[in-house]
Length: 76
Image (cartoon, rainbow, N blue to C red; front, side):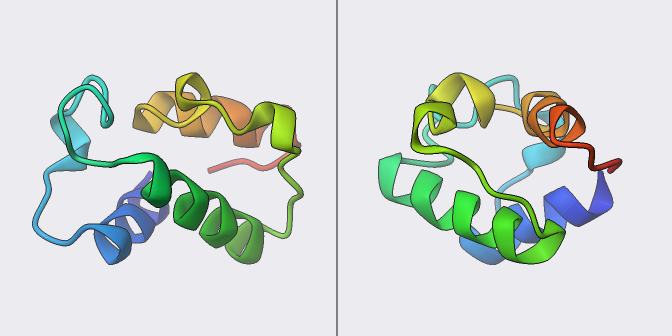
């Protein structure tokens, strides 16, 4: 999870992502950040995230991000 937190902190420094329940509802990330986050995850983990998977529910928390990566065969 540390890798995910580091990626998120690169996008939005100064946020405490580790304790957040929903990054988007809490104003920590916005729709533009979602695109940046997906690009960063694809580059870091060598995965492809389909446009249909680019929904807030898949990226709203550390556990949600971990789940989508796990479905793609990546262990975080």
